[in-house]
Amino acid sequence: MRTRMVLTALVVGGLTACGGGKRQVSRVDANTTTDLSGKWNDSDARLTAEALIADCFNSAWLPNHLEEEGEKPAVAVGRIVNKSDEQIDGQVFTKNIERAMVNSGKVRVLAQRTGALDEVIAEQDFGASGRVSDETAPSSGNMRGADYVVVGRIASITDRLEGQATKFYQINFELVNTETRDKVWVGEHKIKKAISQDSVSW
Image: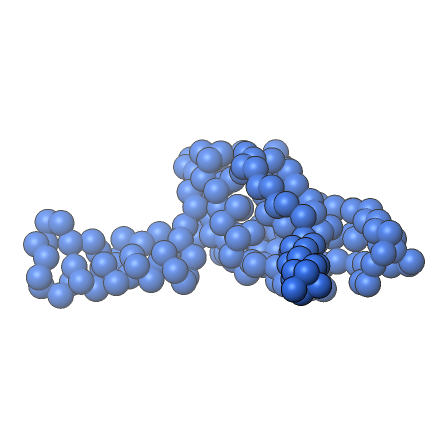
């Protein structure tokens, strides 16, 4: 009987040990820069968007447009092409860019051709159905076209050797005049991370 109790205690103790150590979770500010895996993360997307938009608004195209047109330019965020070796959510990156632009107050940011714009078009179709008064119905003919479109590309290079790795990201943006197809601004942002781990399987 005593032998059985000892064996039971050993089994229970072993299962407890296999369960791992105590886990602790703490809340941090959403804008805190964190990097656990070394891969692209929310901090990279936010900081890259803010850096590129700041550079974009400090270039000559914006005062030139204001002088020629006398009003804020309308900008749409186009496709962000991911050529990196990671699965990067382009929508998260796009929303960071749109937020930085909207918060700057320097441009009008138009809805993309999917998502929010679909809701606008559906509301316009409903307004034209005859079930909404003419005074309050939104008109599809009043939608504004973009003066400029932002397009981008993300590329990455990874170098690994014996538990050491270097991760390099290069993000290129272009702002294109939709009427003339002129590139009025070209921006570049680079991120380089050094990663080390004692026992690793990359």
